[in-house]
Image (cartoon, rainbow, N blue to C red; front, side):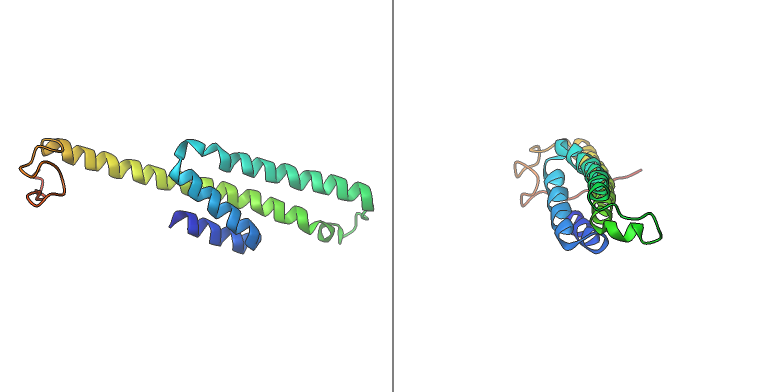
Length: 137
């Protein structure tokens, strides 16, 4: 869900192709969390690409520095927006991974309170005799 949402937002903010790349990168990072640096690295690369594009384009075409100057750099704008959505995806991944960690911690604490997995008559959680017990405070 997080990867799809990141891809849709990226497609709306930058370009459809960017949405596909951001969605795929987000899914990859959610599946392999140690690759999270990829999202931040992609954002930095997009900013660098935007800057390089402006420098090269300005050098080749000598765009006059009037009010129309920013309109000459639409591609740089798309690179910059791609950087923004990669950073947003990184933030969404952070929230998703923290929520996942909290759920696992909570599940692990409940499992330890019940005596751990495999101690029930069915031989483990999810068996026919595995019944959820309400906790008492």
